[in-house]
Image (cartoon, rainbow, N blue to C red; front, side, top):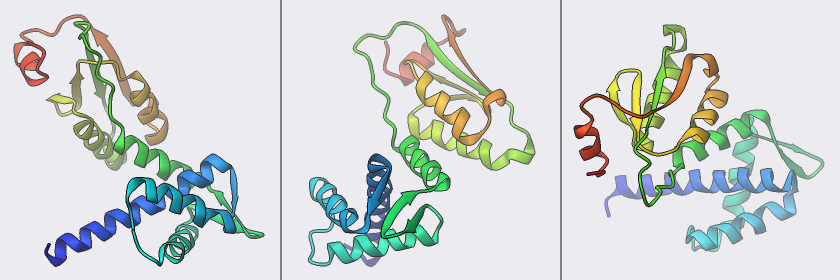
Length: 188
């Protein structure tokens, strides 16, 4: 394994640790410093991350960095999730979200369309990126198609990215000449 791959692997692990810390604090509401490391280390063990002697030190260091980034608050020996931390955690969850694919397609297309101004370009690019990751098909720059129910994730997008009125979710019975879409999604 090359040095670049090792660096990427470490970055992925750090990101996973930070996500685990934020998730642990979110679930517990408020988590004392003495409970953060054992809880996160247990979750790391289940995921097969960081089989090394310095786990507790790494977790404490990561928690400290999350406080510096404003994602956690540390007061009276306890960590608490900030609003920014909660938003970052939801962003990670959206990024990692996998749609459940039903056994049989209901012959309906889910269409997401949006018209987001240039002032909100970052939000527009973020939505496009998430739709690509989720497996949507791009019909046009701001028109995306998916064959299965995805209303929950679209609702999260609207709230988290703050584009509620600028993004529409439609369930349509038919798209003209949709054979290429059926092939793309292996629905033939």
